Length: 360
Image (cartoon, rainbow, N blue to C red):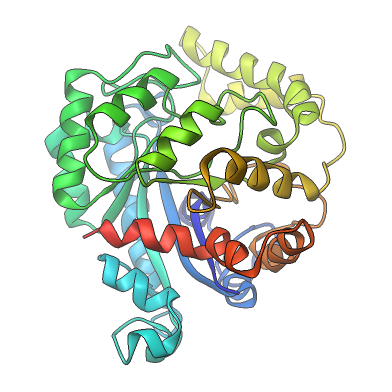
């Protein structure tokens, strides 16, 4: 089984903490684990939040994007930077379907790497700046992490797209940069739906009806995303999957954002305080992944669901899922939960491979 994962935060740890991409046991995503799992395409997100990086936000984001490219350069027999939809198809489609195209399985089985920008803070409120990041290789933009000049977030004001935000969506579509609404507010989701001419994704969001985390999608959002031809990537962090875990995690997250909004606390200190405020329960069962997948299929159909693990961006994962190396267990789980072989294939890679054919 192939796997297409639309979100990991690994590159920040590799770049800023010096983690070894081939051997670090604390990383959820490593080169050996990608290989072992059968991942055909992995999105590496460059997360640069202005409240953390302040005047260095642009440079931090650019350095992470370039570090993603550097990984591909460092391991050319294993990884390549995907810049077009054809690259994605070549990496994920069966060899017979792609012939001898560069980058794909028939060209040595290399894994497609997609460079992403998580949160638009690095654009400094200028929609045209996405062109620079596109030139650097970025092919997916998460519109918000916290509030930006382009839209509000689930962690912030909850406001919709601003005029600059609407222009940013339009520019992304012109360039072939996938628009991602994970973290964006419910109103921003509705506004993107009204503006977008192409399918878009929620790269790492689960189902709010199953777990009330506001970062998850409501049933109405799932239906609308499906009708627009988009796909949601089921996140694999415990706080997105389990209502009990989220309830215990929420006080810590609330404390973190209150401290950051006050403006008198450094990021690291606020994060440490939030960790102390959390009272994490035991890791939830892996079966919750199937619960979210089945709910999304029941609401939006089998073509709207994929995987967006948020690996190396979460502190807890379900039992039996210690990193990307365990993704084959998800395929087995979905089969045992009653999905057909074709449905499992769609969830694990097919739906995302389809929607990402629009990048370029």
